[in-house]
Length: 414
Image (cartoon, rainbow, N blue to C red; front, side):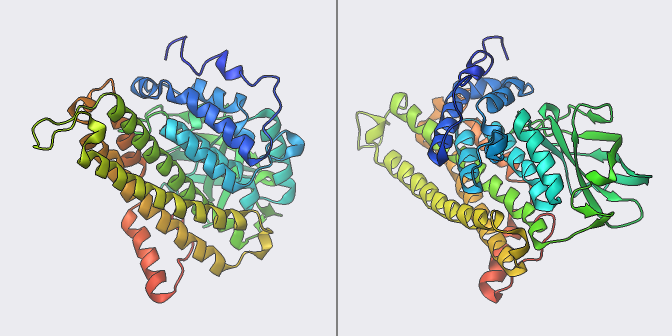
């Protein structure tokens, strides 16, 4: 990443002195401005694989990190339906940064999911006013983060294999199990402290700029009063607490869709500008854009992505309605039904997105495999993250609902 990198100053300050966007369309336009900057050198930054410090500065200076924050603290006051669209638009330009922003929105909402009203107010005021970025040391398959009590404090110690965005975050969401119990505790802490030590070991095929490597938690102390959702050391459960998983899974579907849309757009541009017609087929065309098989190929891929977009938009709206409704009103059945819809959306965009990111090479031609073109970034990004949890289990959840009318029980992945 050089000193002339497009997302370093002064371009990240291009909104300095300007008022925050107004309404949904204003925020989507702001996301498009950010995406335009990111798209300029997405391939080069992916190859370099450096910490996305400048990219995070871009998200902050543009105000996108405050999208869901309260208006009274300088936030956008927007809903989740808008947040999902913003994630998607950023991911069209850069899948890694789309993921970082999506995870940030989920963790920024973590207090509303599980915390008390007093905790929510304090955390949201701090994060919104200061334009802070969230990361999370929350990986349910790692059960080696243990919490012990020490008077009026909780002491978190252990390790997590994944901590997306942690290295470049300002706040970290910790999750662990209280020693001697099965009680999970969430807490939000400053990232910059001696007890949070990142492994800097993220070395993946795709999503290379998400800083999703390991982290060690070394005796990080948190006041009992900061344990999210606990009153007098007892958790106050609500069905609403369990919306964290459908929400993050829908974040996945949106940045998957963005990655796939970006693949199709970049491939189409390459075909228009560079791909040559095939002269040995007996139906010779002057230009590649006249080739019947190329037109058919783009048509099939676009049709799938339009269908996926319609499904994802619908599920975005359904989930957003639950997220913004009174927390006490959510029923287990309503939560389960939206979880099934989220699973269905994920199934479709993973399969169609991977098909798109692969098929575009057949439509662009052999020269499009050059490293300088970088068309592989979309497949690598989507293939990497879509392995987060097995897709067949999502299909089974939808199948059980379709056949038996049963909704899935909340788990760390459902």
